[in-house]
Length: 358
Image 1 (cartoon, helix red, strand yellow):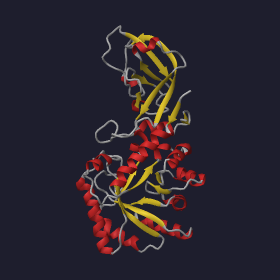
Image 2 (cartoon, helix red, strand yellow):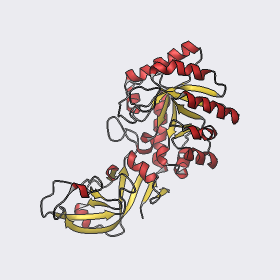
Image 3 (cartoon, one colour):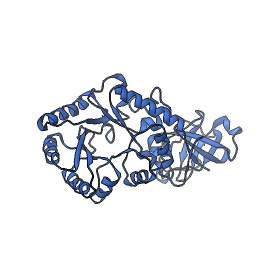
Image 4 (cartoon, one colour):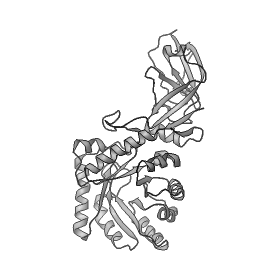
């Protein structure tokens, strides 16, 4: 059986570390849980670790959290569909927005539900995901300013989310200046400048993030410990919050080179096959029943550094296990760490069980 093993200790350690970094600079933190795909047991681990504010990009997940009775400040992290606005108001306290029509309709829904709904206006700073064009920001703000059931909590931006744009002090300072402009023009304080992310944390620790950036939305660094700027794991964080345990279903000594003619067109998925094997070279290969149907196999990293991914199909992954093949046997487990894309697909995969470590 294949399982994702979730470590409460590692998640608690990472959350407390990131929270400490953020609070040291006078900022607040929302933990992004969208990679957990609504897995309530994992979210409960974060709750027990002290998380008070969480964000997700799926309303189904926010609904599950709401109905579970766990109390969070709930952020909805993607632009809402026009037909789901009643649920946005019902299941989130804060949503990220860029379109006037959507915010006006949120205001109408909030009035129906007798609520004040908070919004963060997202500004385009160069990553080319969602964002209000800076030249339109003042006019949009003015149109939203007087809506009675909408509270503008602040302005924000996404960097490093789709185009790989590395957050820079100049870009972040632009956002700070936009807030100052809006505060002066409309004589109302905007509490939050929400532009912190896992990609911003290394710069925060270097002291190069403008002090006015005072809200962070962090997922990957807390879940996996990843340093998105320098590579590897951030100092003080752990990378074993989520481990994949996969069972060996075949272990044999085989040729390390395929026989006969090969065509790339016949390979349905990108292969990690090592290319430096010699004709006739042999070695031990282990098969585990995790494939591209389950996760992004190239995102997996065997915990044992002597193991190498050799390739994967929809249902199986092959590993070259070297001399270890003489001691491995059917039913043994191979353990993997994973990247963010691998985690997302595993947590969204109904074929792989998720277990909280005790």
